[in-house]
Image (cartoon, rainbow, N blue to C red; front, top):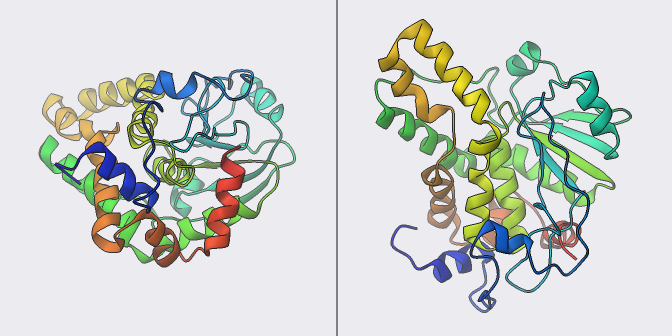
Length: 291
């Protein structure tokens, strides 16, 4: 939605032109967590072995929405692959997670198996619909950015992607207890899910974007390590060309949102027509997300 006003972009996310009373709600990530409607909950633990683990609801008392509600914390969590150390596994067990949804391909799962939270059920939902995640050769950062944007658009248009995301959101809506979803790095496939959940909750678009970009903060040591390794193995030019694959950028998420608008007009239509969710399911999911 290049060139549109922020109000128009938020209207698109909500699928309703009459619900834009967003003034004063969260122009920054910090303000979105301030002015609490409920008392703050304990901070979500940082996991050294699963660095991109976080609460979808935000920090503090939770993200505020444009209609004066607030995200519930402790309901949905997102992460990268669950390569849990013993200490982190014990920490995660205290959160009472009952269901884990793995969005990776079979080959990714075979290479790095999850360490499951104690007592949690697990389900694999192969978002890409392929046996493995394959990155095509890229000759420049421009090529890498184009690939990431293409992936984001495919989350909206691809058959396997829509099926997996629809199944996941349905399960999250109908589940009980805390639930966790993750991909390999927790930034792209899982990042799209988190953006959808925040959109359903009516969190302002600028806050959704800032939450998406937090993966760059949480994954900074991993990104640096991957870059160093690639530079040593393939040289500085290749490392520079592939750098955009390792992080997230506003243009990636925006490509997905733009595709939703191009294909379905509104986020509400994408959820119902594209992902096959009933209005009742979307409402149930919103009720789980906010209070």
